Image (tube, rainbow, N blue to C red; front, top):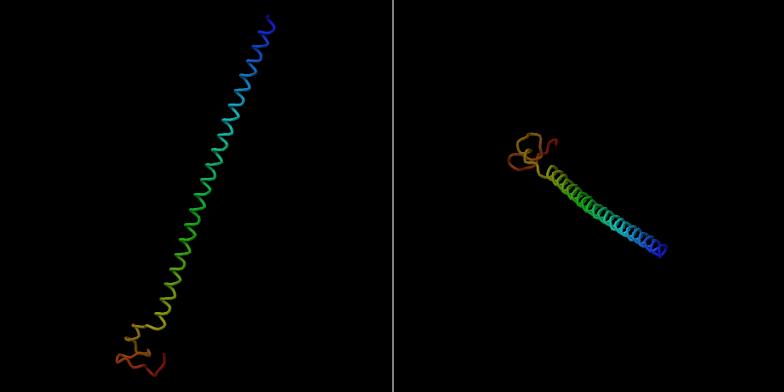
Length: 101
């Protein structure tokens, strides 16, 4: 009778160790999955931030280009300061000057 009781106790102890190992493995798997999910969420957020920054930079560059072209066109065709200079094509009476530019 002594040997089967000892054997039963050893088997119960082995079963307890097996259950503890399985629980530990399950907890580790859950932790790894959570870490992977957190890393994926962080990467997605960083990707969104990078896309927003790139789009904002592109919009700012486009606005700057439009501003530069607008200023260049206005500088070429609309010269209000030329009304007050003597060497311009535009005179006070609005007639073009025939002299040098």
